[in-house]
Length: 308
Image (cartoon, rainbow, N blue to C red; front, side):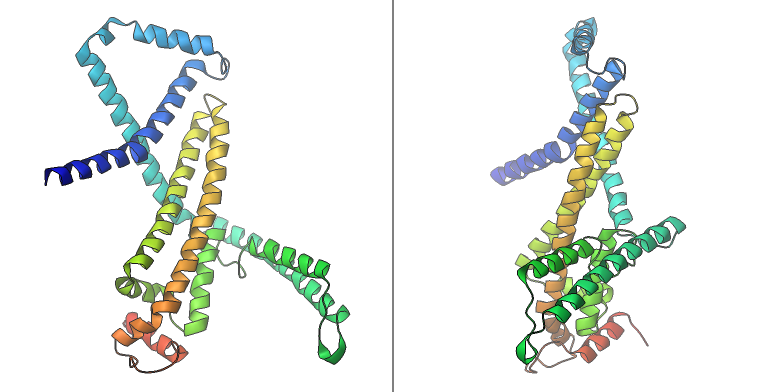
């Protein structure tokens, strides 16, 4: 038992240091440097060195108890800063996935929808032109490689906005909405009602994969929260803008990658285990052939919503 407790304690300490203390300590160090230097002396290393020497020369720091209290205060402050970043990260997660109910969100949705439609029209024109000019014998269509490359580029440009016509103000929300729409179109099932029940029967490897993608998305949102913190620090020390830009760019890239993977995994889980769920709740027989039918999906949605 003692080795087990020691191992668990070591892992908890490692996670505490990596997730809470180190990011918070880095932010505190940048805050201290910014407070000492300011905009005017932003690159004055001698000024920062002098400030540190004056702090170290104070008589109170010669006492062991005072030094220990100072270290504990730094650790607690770093942990508090990281907890605040986690709280803000959770709010950012929900903000990225929000629906467009307020005026600003509706305006963003309309703007994104307009851009998507414009690119979709260009793609449709390119595909129509390729079919008109590439007509071959026996009804075959011969499309040059250059035209295929252009069509692929137009498709990627449209999909960077959304896989389907935007209905939410952000790419993140539309990516999850596209997954729900595709599942409903294929199986007639409401993904929001289906998912909590499906999660209960997923095998351990699938749960780990989905949880890993979900954790990566949360980590990206926390990184975005740190970008907000460094942006506030830039009001007193402008070099913090560099940290803001780096954190924001990394957060955006990681969040898009993680959410795209999460959406694919959720859709794959429905494809692979949706019929198993219908079998377990008694809507179809285990011996029945074929995939999950649309009418079965409608019955599952009605049952899970507790519809009359």
